[in-house]
Length: 238
Image (cartoon, rainbow, N blue to C red; front, side, top):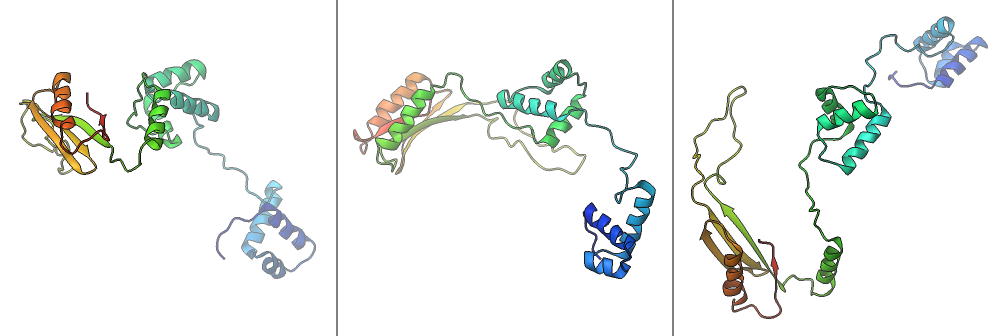
């Protein structure tokens, strides 16, 4: 018979039926239990007064951080996701009288589901009302096809930016490769793109300041032959 969890009420019922004179085979076929289980329950009841075995005397170490402290920790990381483990360790010692090592605290957080992640930074200066007005304007005052907009952005590269950061090597061996340590010449690319593709681009040596960016908008983007008054540049550059 397949091992399964049997309710204690069924175990007690089987013992009562056996005490009343029922045949062991009839009890086992009716309750779908084995005779060995019936003998084991009778022995447990005779020795401990219960059909269930007593809890094992050897137990593992109790949890250092209880449920109340874990709930408080989750609230802390909900409000302050950038809290250091050292700060959390100090907070637990002061407010909950819990003394725990950094390694044990890290393991506890991992088991709880509080994993280490890349922070998503939100600007303190963000104007939520302005964002709502902007999204409302985009959703209601335009066609919804995106053909009224031109997106402008810039990116810069040097010799360090094109180098690979990860590689492969045998276990225990470093992944060595030769590459330049000098940044070299910095190039900045600025481009404007519509639904039809790129309409203007410019590459400059060094950084692109506000004057060069404004000149690019006026000379290369606004003066583009296909752009009329129905286009609204969306500036995501400096």
